[in-house]
Image (cartoon, rainbow, N blue to C red):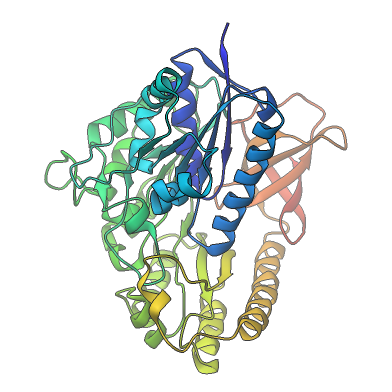
Length: 443
């Protein structure tokens, strides 16, 4: 009889992909996923601590599983991700009902950790971070998750040490995956019917610089071209990028690779040079704006999105005004914006001149309100245009309603009485725009 597995995932696409990997690894040992944690034999919580709010959600989640165990449910509780790496054995001291604590580099050992706990009934901690770590070869199955689009991890960790960020401490130093392994996984997925692939890493722009067997001149642009050349692939995306490593060759890919989607997530974090310097971002706002303009020269229809931190220590009214000006200049299609929060080990936690919470809240509200106006105006500019949409799936209600995405990653809702297939490409004429989506008619 198969064992049941439940995975709860917090945070970014990297965590989503790690959860898929863990599900497959345990699947090879007769574990089947369930959506009911109370039925599970193993529960895995994949955590994020990039911001204080994300870490708090994880700790709240642990409390739910404590109550579940208290009601007599006998399951192994494993915690992974950034909170696990950050707190390590201290998690077991605070929460002795947790059975396994493992860092992001240790997820590939999950089956053996589960087996060891079953055998010895002793809590386990696996949070070693090694500069010699090699991301193992991996060929996914498509039993779980959407069959038409998938993530592929090309690297993990980070060497940038931005002063607000925990990633170098929780995911380790930057390690690129083998060029051949990535290409083999992408080819495998496309042969299985996947139409869209997203290459993911903390900083994909610096792929190939450390920790893999890539040959000279096998950097990220070369990887993009190789994956794009797989017969049958219809769309290619990537995230996330660091502006300092954005090369002219990579920008040129948007003009030269037909399947590369016209969407670029380019985190700016702040529009102030003094704040960027305190953040250790290693670029000026002038250099950032120049690269944003160059991207639009290569691909005029490219949709740019970004990350912004409001209220970084020392941020003045003028610094915040500079960030607002960058939004006006670039005209982002979307922005993930957050109030600064101190993170363990991050250098900025010790910075003086913390911005008052009330000021951060007011600035964030102003920024988000203006960004919503910009994003809506950009969507309204698409009314009357005909766009290519990849079908995501059917709406639960009303009937005959479908949803898809443009190459620029915009959601489009439309009507169709026929049975459509996720991954199918259609042409849709845009008729109206809402804050978070477009509406159109299928042609």
